[in-house]
Image 1 (cartoon, one colour):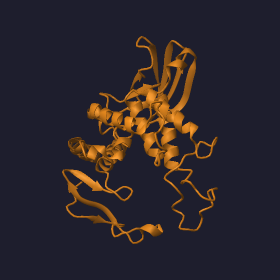
Image 2 (cartoon, helix red, strand yellow; image 1 turned 60 degrees about the vertical axis):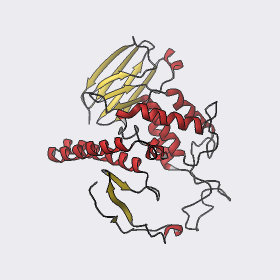
Image 3 (cartoon, helix red, strand yellow; image 1 turned 90 degrees about the vertical axis):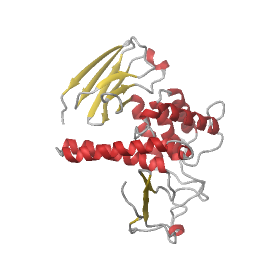
Image 4 (tube, helix red, strand yellow; image 1 turned 180 degrees about the vertical axis):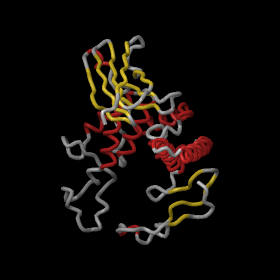
Length: 306
């Protein structure tokens, strides 16, 4: 955030053959620009993505400092995060806002765009129209599947569960190995060092699979559909069932031992009332928008057993 000259760091470990002669292989960041880190991700400079994840990292570091009684560090890192967020908000406009990684990081997992939801929604709507057909399917097979699932996570936080389910169902119907729930990256095999092209199971690999970033995005999205923490509310708020379809509300449901930041959540729905148990801390609780506004909500706070 403060460098006035390029930062380089030597690369340790094996380097893919196609990148060995890259003159920028050691370049970590360029000089700061308009208060923003000019970092690198996948050999390019997605400015808003780099600063969104850095903002989240600073806030998480501050939270850790609080827990180990280091208030000075916590304040310093929160102040830095606030400064970075202000710079991000100023830069959230074309052409930077049109960069694809912006839409995998703005709410999930960083919340850096919490005060710019309307502008973010406009950008997401434009991307949805461009990438999806009238039935919600992809117009062409996506190459970077983790991007598309992370983008669905933004829709969850914007109360558009329909967009989330449309995306999930498309990926469930288009698996790299049907029935194994694995997905892919790119076109053709890579990262092989020309030694193990056939190890993954294809004589002529159509893509790289399985892909663990995609697996992680898929799992974390479905967990947040059950309950997630809105860290930008006036008080940290657990949102219950934001990804539950309305058709499910006619039958009993329950979730046990759902791990969340510093807490664990159980919830039980009997068709009329939602009973929630929170272990590990006092947080506000609200129901996702799919539940009727007059739904009875009972919250019980319990001591952590760990």
